[in-house]
Image: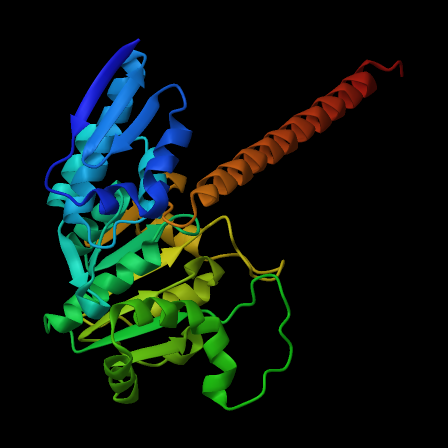
Length: 345
């Protein structure tokens, strides 16, 4: 059994360990093969040399994150332990990852995963970007941060946020109130992201003066969207006609990010999503980028990654079963035809 003593420097032990050692306890639970004890700025590790090295690597990253990331939380520790990236990649990402924009109270908003960082780069290189991935991967949040940055830098004059008003598997029925009251429930996720990035007074000012517009996709028809950063959210719920309408509204001095999740299509059964077709036919066009995020980019609760993976595996199994049944029917049909051919006349 090996033993290693680490001396923590440049960071408050309370920030590193968490209140009542909450952060350190997460590490202990993940590495039960190693005895981890802390006293002040000293951490003692006992166990197999290989496992000690793994724990030491995670602690090194935690120290760097505690130094560089305001509001370092237990969620960050859980995310770190779920992340498959190497220690070097994780340290480099948190050390060199540039701030997209500063949100409320000066909190820096950064790309938290490799693919979110690629989304930032893809948007810089293309005027139209498709960001595709499951729920919780931060595609809309990252796109919103890019839009706020463009507005603050005066690269655009306004931000337009839109999504199709489709109910997610539920029928909400009659909604009372004026038009804004009726459509706001569909747009609530966009408002939630804005609330994180702008003080309430400034956000209300921008919305009142139409510097920031939040509206259903149907309201885009007939307009030319120029000098704007446009985000189309939940694009998997657009028909081909709707998506074509939106894309042809984009003006010469505009940027757009289209987000979607092809595994969560809420359109009625007789309607097909236009997102998959758009991804196929627009891929060769220079200036239109495509970025795919996965369950590894999930930044919500650590269990969300596992939920998405489980559903993906179930979908793959269902698809394999459909293929098997189709092949079985084709084989039966071929046997029937062969029997008919061999029957005596």
